[in-house]
Amino acid sequence: MSVQAIGSTLNTTDPSSLPNSGINEQDFIQLFVSELQFQDPMQPLDNSQFLTQLAQFVGIEQQSEEVTGINNLATLDSSDQTVALLSHTVQVSNTNGSTVTGKVTGIQYSTSGVQLTVTPTTGSVLTNVNLSQIQLVTP
Image 1 (cartoon, rainbow, N blue to C red):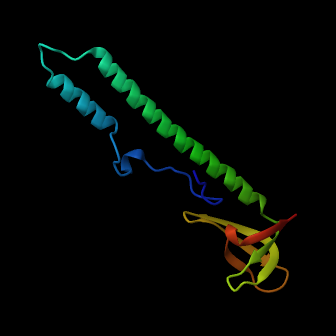
Image 2: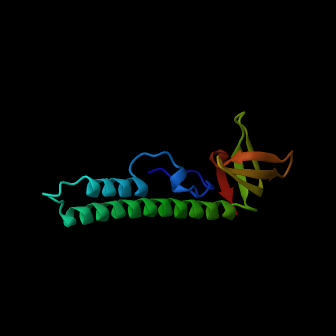
C-alpha cells in the first residue's frame, strides 16, 4: 500500500456516491428478500445460511471502514509532518536543476497534495513547491 504525499485530503466521500464495484447493503437486502420470496415451500432454506451470509457481509463492511480509517490516520500523520516544516530552513531543487535555500513560510493543502511557500534569504519567494523538491531540512 502506498501512502500519498504529505497533506492528501481525507477520504470524506459518501460511500453511496462511489462507483458500485460490488454488492452493497441495499443489494444484499433485495437479494435476501428475493431468496425468501422465491424459495420452494417444500424445501425451505436453512436459517443458518442466511445468518452466515449476513455475518460475512457485515465483516466485509467493517473491514472496508477500518481501511478507510487507517488511510485517514496516515493522512493526518503526514499533515502533522508538513506543519513541522513551517519556519524550518529547507534546500529546494528548482526545475532548472539549481538549488535554493530558504525558510518555509506557508503551506497550502489541495487534492493534489501539499504546496509549500519558501522564502529564500535573497531572491523572490518560491510558491507551489512540492515536497519532492525538498532535498534538505535544517532547524
